[in-house]
Length: 227
Ligand SMILES: Nc1ncnc2c1ncn2[C@@H]1O[C@H](COP(=O)(O)OP(=O)(O)OP(=O)(O)O)[C@@H](O)[C@H]1O
Ligand SMILES: [Mg+2]
Image 1 (tube, rainbow, N blue to C red):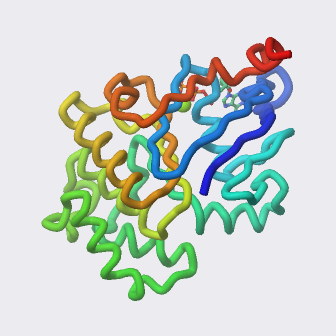
Image 2: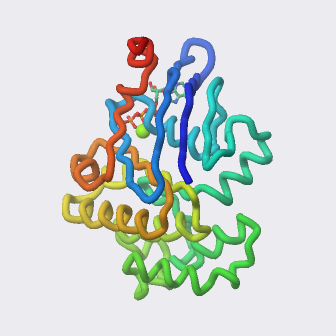
């Protein structure tokens, strides 16, 4: 299992706001390892996650998830790959208002066309793994920020994704919580064997990560310097 981006270019926006967000990026991400994706604001970290997670089709290049080129799939096939093979965890948690922690995972199962019942035990196991066995019945407004992020992590892992994509998980939490969350993501990655990419500005994450990929090393400027 692996994620390989080859010569990926993405332009976003139209007219005056048209921007090359990724320019000829080539990078490899290994399974069972947490890779921290670093680089200045605007260097394309979130865009790389969107392309890797089949949310966005690149203008050019290949995005190989375990050998399948996500860039070459139809919109429908891409949507399917996204639901079945990718787990996302956004900073805000992106939980659905009004649903309990356990229901958040059930909703994710339903969206992917899996009967929630068949995944019930698994959902509880994951919520226990992230330390929330005593919060199964709590809605987002009854959870702390860190607890919401942990629900989001459990939800991202429910369908055993090959790829776990995380955008700035520690941007809004204190150092102790940042360390705990990063360790949890790293341990979970090793246990599940998924490819995990975490976009971050936080040294806590880069120190814990198994490897660090710098957006600036993967630009066309760098590539053109290679004979
Ligand atoms: N919809 C859009 N239209 C035009 N340009 C965009 C659009 N979305 C993002 N961009 C531009 O693409 C570039 C890459 O953005 P991206 O969000 O991937 O950066 P980032 O590395 O995640 O930054 P940050 O660290 O601030 O989150 C930026 O220069 C941004 O201004
Ligand atoms: Mg970003």
